[in-house]
Image (cartoon, rainbow, N blue to C red; front, side, top):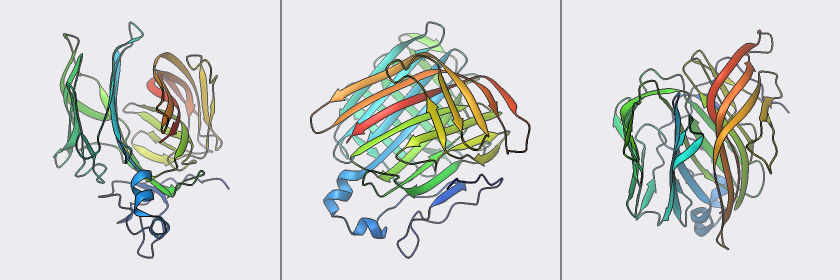
Length: 340
């Protein structure tokens, strides 16, 4: 059954779990105060240890600029935590900084259940500190201090297009539920230093991905995200189905149907095609470079590649509307498989 794309998405529910213990599944325009799974009926049937080990939370921020792209994340896996930060130079087409580190949840890392309003996430490691937290009523303070990269920025939510809230069941693999908040392009200001060089944040925009779920031990997804003031989108295929697929067009949030990803798994720096089955989006992606990591720790493993590049093609707000050209929209794709 296809997920239809209503012109106006409803406001978020007060909780991701209804009073009867069922999921408040759906796509919504706006922010939810907390993502709390304690009263989910299906979760209460699992042990406390299962809930602890399968509860995954993360905060991801992508920063787009004409000459660079920055990606950073703080991830609480339940039994461990990790963080990464990278700086991609678009002119040199290479990563100038590619940092990651693991830590102990609660001690070195925390990701709160508040995704945006009241958000608090931090990672404190050897020679590193990353932090994202609400600083004002309509602002988030972002700090990244890792070897080679220092960033102090304020992300402005005051004039943001509606954020997407997606809530729903896990599509396959034994997980229970997931919820995510995604933003389109957000204004920011601040200071950025990379290996002794100072970069201006003028003209840069940020996008947020705050996610929280009771996930399967084996989780995989393909993801694409790109944003600027007039157009942006978020697409995912994998463990969460089509539930977080959305298009932002001139500030309007539009739900999209299932996404298809066509790419060479063995050569992810070759062109990609991403499109949705409802006929509202069809884009070509040309990678300029990538961050990638393969890890196998025995009890956990992951394959991760996140190409950085630009999208071109067309989008439309409805099946009846004329196609609108998209050119050189900076963003990322991702192929990710985890045993966690």
